[in-house]
Length: 267
Image (cartoon, rainbow, N blue to C red; front, side):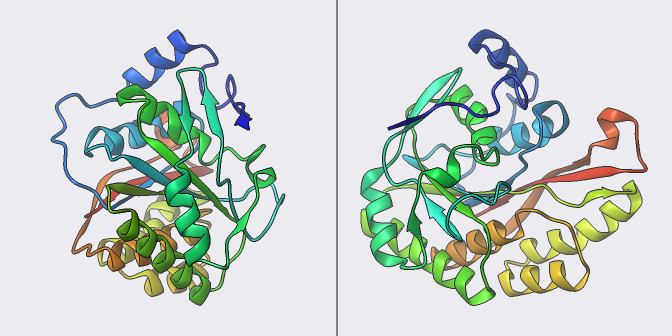
């Protein structure tokens, strides 16, 4: 089964040549490549969040597989849905799903449902692929969409993914796809988002889950980020850093209603 692009021509340019040119403007060719266990990357239209995503993908060594974890915006499918086989297509490449790793994740993580339908119209993972394709179309992917999960379920999911990566015994980077605060004034977004970013920097998944709820931070992918942190810690992560933060106001000029974007590396 091949999943065609759902937001090509909307969130990013719809032809291979135009998309390559669009992504190229966000790539930092002088970035030093570092080993990453996990990353946080935004998923808005590239015109808004591409500069943040580009900085993150420019700064990591590419693995054999990317485990892509994003929020389920559409409400279609199970609570936690993994597309376990097939391919994903965008204008600049076709990515095969890593069935060896997806089988291990399914076996180690009963909370996951094998469900391709949840991914049909969901943009949060698709928008990562143009950046991956810019550097290489060789990496495989494992796409996971999270609609809802308790803190304990995030832990079980993260530790199940980590165990599976250890069992296949090759490099994988876990991508948590998330935008930060939504539709608040720029100063409010920066103040609230800093609290969430500090929890990620301190490798504190429980703290992230709690502070987002307590402070009512409208971070759409806080569950994927929590899962990524649990997995990264189980895989031996010892530090995290903020690569870049921006808001949509820097592009639109509207600082009254912004969306925040953070790019982070966990290693």
